[in-house]
Length: 234
Image (cartoon, rainbow, N blue to C red; front, side, top):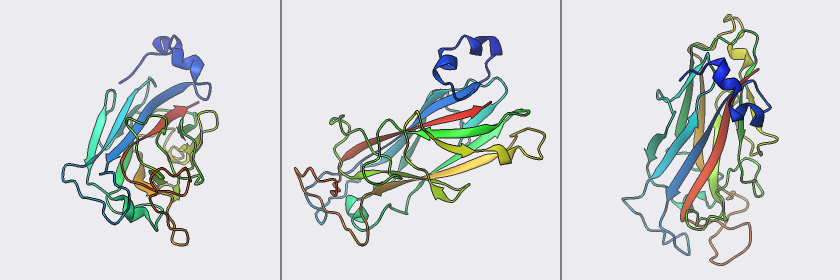
């Protein structure tokens, strides 16, 4: 889990990520499968349906270890979720039940005067809602939903994370976690909750219209939402 400075200097990521001296980059992949139908009322339940969250990445900082829900993720971290239904998003921004909890734990992090932070971003821009992470619609094989995505809630700020791109990522400042602790993040935890979200609203309900190009449409199906995280300190 630890890498020497000499190896880090030779890493291509050193030149690619100019935001920080040390970078932990991984991708959160949230996907779910729901029986795809043309209207909400007849959405069928599928007992074999679940949602899976995966983490992929590598740890570069030489003096820091980071785990998610008690597990390292040098390769892949996975968790399964109960199925949800598209009609539950008709009048609401997200489905409150069955959230995905992401507990990030820091260990052996002696940062000194460095300023630690999370940078969160997506390759897919938001449609009309700045807090809704969307799947890549160009990938028609893995994505067949409309208006369905993921909302990421940061318990540290009690706010939903805004969807931004890699050049202007959403920043989560962790500096307060090291104040008064000798520049260490030892035992510090940051919790996020991911919810299945959509474009529905109480005053602006959405419906599934097959073949419609309107952005105010929400249909069930298959979706893979990718959210990138960087843990950095300078």
